[in-house]
Every structure is written in structure tokens, then in C-alpha cells.
Figure: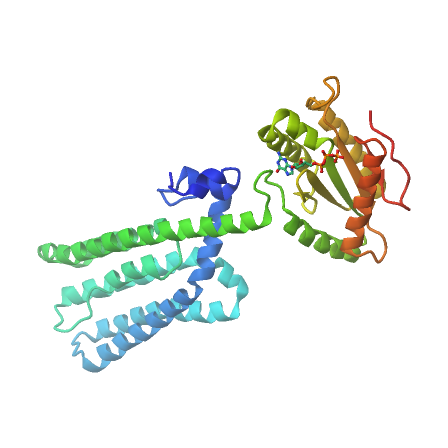
Length: 401
Ligand SMILES: Nc1nc2c(ncn2[C@@H]2O[C@H](COP(=O)(O)OP(=O)(O)OP(=O)(O)O)[C@@H](O)[C@H]2O)c(=O)[nH]1
């Protein structure tokens, strides 16, 4: 469990829940984990390209030196070595070219990077062991070790993937050594293996600490975004995101030629409720009503928001005036069904007044909001616990009882 004050405050959000339950094994709940991997991928793009470039430059350099300086009597090995070096460079070139030219590859890259790295690592181990067997005076050793380090820091894959890659490289090294080296040379080779294992442990510890703080930062950023867009008490969208959604949905409704309705809702006699039952009970009522309202924003483009103290908005996409009236009626009935005691009349229940406006030709967001607000005023003036429709739209301001 993480020691963030926000973890406790925002347990209703996926980010707060994850902060609260912790992630010592470096794993989030599936949906968050997917989001985190996209985030990791976006941030690792530059280091992935640099790693590919470094691989090309370093291996080309080795190849050049091996050809110019090595006096390899076994020319068959020099040919194989050249082939293996080219095989090591190729994935680097492919990665570099594709990440610059193909968007689709960029999105898929994280899946194949580990496989490419293991392949390059196995080739590096093979080259090292072959040199070891040949007893060549000069050779570039411990290439597999460099790849173990790279897997932890350059790929933008998670700790667990990097660990898996590194373990596979070490195992492949031991396996290839057991095939190529005479039995008497194995003890000497274990020194190289111990070096790889040490690099693996150092890499894994550093990467674990780094990824832990990356995950923490990711959750905090997401939480900050959530706080900016939501109302802390009810968990619904706040006024700011309602204003934004209203503008976006109007533009979308115009483009798609779909109806759009806005319901403004205001809990009745809320001041009296606060005065009679206390402010905390008032807060609880706001939360209860918010939960009820959220259940009416059923489609992806619908939105339930808290736009003021005890004022709410329900934005319904592809919903004409008749459907909006049906929903308003259902809402009033559902609230009555909760049987929340009225502050002034023990026999009555808490109710809500609703103003409905449906988007008209050429109407601006402020005008639509104003129409719904005027209808809400009409519903209040007409006796509360009812809905009213904006002037000029189809008539009905009858109480739902
Ligand atoms: N508990 C609680 N009360 C709030 C909150 N925000 C605003 N209020 C209270 O809500 C009350 C709103 O009162 P009014 O605007 O007079 O509305 P009303 O009493 O519902 O009257 P009608 O709308 O005419 O039915 C005020 O007393 C505010 O203090 C909040 O977050 N929690």
C-alpha cells in the first residue's frame, strides 16, 4: 500500500484505488496496465531509436576492427562472424527505419523488441563463446552483458519483460557454451556467466526502482487529470468538463445530424434538508443523487455532471425531446423510489426539478444551457418535483406523481 494522502481521498477513482492497493509486483489492474504500457511506449521512443543507432554503430565498429586487426587463421570463422555481426545489425536498421516511417509499427514495436533483443543477445553470446573456444588473442567479450543492461534501460518494456529477456540471454549463453566449449573450459566460462548474472541483478534492481517511480508518477498524473475534470464530492464531471462536453457534443450532433438534449436538475428544498438533517447528510444526498444520475448517462457520449451546489446536468446524445421527457420522468420516479425523507413533511419524499432543452438549429452552447435553465425555473415555479420543457419545444410541465 502506498503512503499518498491522495490514495485515501480518491479511492473512488481507478487511479486512487490502484495507489491505495499498491503495486509492489509492478503490475496494475488490466485496463490501467494497458494505459501504462502506452505511456511507457510513448516515453521510450527516443531511447529505442538511440539504442538501435548505438547497436548499428557499435557492431559495425566491431566488424570493421575484426576484419582489419584480427589475424584469424580460421577464415571460415571470419565469414561466419561477419554473417553473425550483420544479423545483429539488421534488427537495429529495421527498428530505426520502421519507427520513423511506420506509425503502425511504432504501436506494435513493444511486442517485438524483446524478441529482437534476445536474438541479438544470443548471437553476442555465440560470438563470445566461439572466440573463447578459439583462444583468439584479441576479441570483444561480454557483448551479451551489454545487451542485458540494454534490456533494462533502453527498450521501454516493463521490468518483467526485461527480466525475462535477460534471463533468456544468460540461459542461452550457458547452453551454447556447453555445446561449443570443451568440458575443461567450462569453469573459466562460469566467470563470464557470473559477470552476466551480476549485470542482471544490478540492472533488475535499478529498473525495479525506476519503474516503481514511473508507475507512481503515471498514477499521480492521471489522478491530477481526473481531479481537474471531476467533482470531488459526487465523482461526476465538474462544471468545467460539462462546458467542454456541451461544446463538443453540439458540434458532433450537428455533424451527425442527431438530436441532443440537455437536462438541468436541481434538488428541491435542499437548504431545508441541510438545515434539518445537517450538512453531512446533505453531502450524502448529493452523492446518492449523483449515483442515480450517473446511471442515466448510459451511452458513451452521454454525460452526467454536477454544475453547482445541488445542481446537476445530464447531457443526452442522440436523444430527442420526447425521449428526454421519458428520461426525466424515470429520474423523478427513481428518486421517489429511494424514499428519502423530505425535511419539512415527514409524509413526503425528497424530489428534483428538471428543465429540458433540445438543441435547435443554429443554437450556441450558452443558449441551449440558458433554455434548459429557464425551463428548470419554470418547473420550480410550477410546484417542484416535475420537469418543464424550454419555451417553443413540445409542451409538458406536468408533475410526475
Ligand atoms: N451539504 C451540502 N450543501 C450544499 C453544497 N453546495 C451547496 N449546498 C447548499 O445547498 C443549498 C441550496 O439552497 P437553495 O439554492 O436555496 O435551494 P433549495 O433550498 O433547494 O430551494 P429550491 O431550489 O427552490 O428547491 C444552500 O443552502 C447551500 O449551502 C454541498 O456541497 N453540500
